Image (tube, rainbow, N blue to C red):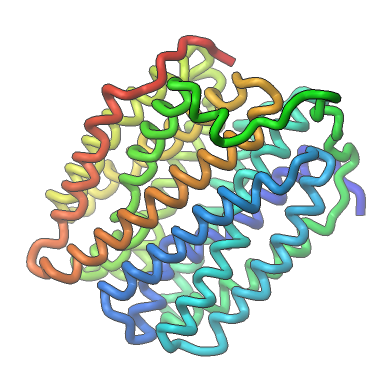
Length: 383
């Protein structure tokens, strides 16, 4: 079946983030339901994020031609589905560790490769990235709200079943054929390949990577333990799902209006805004569990995640064509994988040992955003 290329990209984002809306907010609840304690949950989630780092860092750069991006996404969708089924085959921590590594290793590169596909198509025809990427956010809203309801009715077992079904949908969506295939013309004849070593020789790139790793890494306590934290505070799975959805509603609004809101903003200034939002958001989350405050906390997700991601896309898109895919890979590996992996393990260790004051892990996340204020890349170019 042939569909418009922008629709293909929108469906890919939608099905991917629908699956992610089940895995990210609710996997700690599923693990706890399987009898895993908080420290081991932190280890499993952290190791999984480490696998995300490896997948984004080493699998993503294997795709050297834009024309091969869709084939790569199809292969990764098949492997992600296989490992999602693996969660149904046992709940021993050693088996879960193996499956977590495999699932994250192949599931994670689909984000940077999807964004690289968007970048490749933007050089072939004009479209608004924000309006396409927003479908991923819409899927997250629907998925997390629906999963909150299903988990409340059917229990934690429904979380694993929903993940398998959503990964099957992701696989089917990648098999559709876009009307305009990505072009391999981005590979310039005679142009040397850009290595990670060459990228990090640029001090601006290093500052960018450290900054986004701190800001995205500060989500470790949120991604890994917010659901457990709110459940301990007395909130139902349905309320927890709706809180996650609210954060992504705010994300949708900012993605949709990104061109209008931030057209004249540099990546450097967007990162400044994201850092301020992080300090406020994580500080509030550590101090309060009252629902009105949590609503504010979740609205600030549009600042801590969305604005940071927009800054990253702006910074990366402004680089040379030969640098886009490798830099996208390093960004996803460090900011969305490596940093989060280490911090999630640390948070799990602390969370297990301070049972009377779990909010302290969010104060630590607020502190991570502070140095980002001062090490932003010195760029003024806008895209």
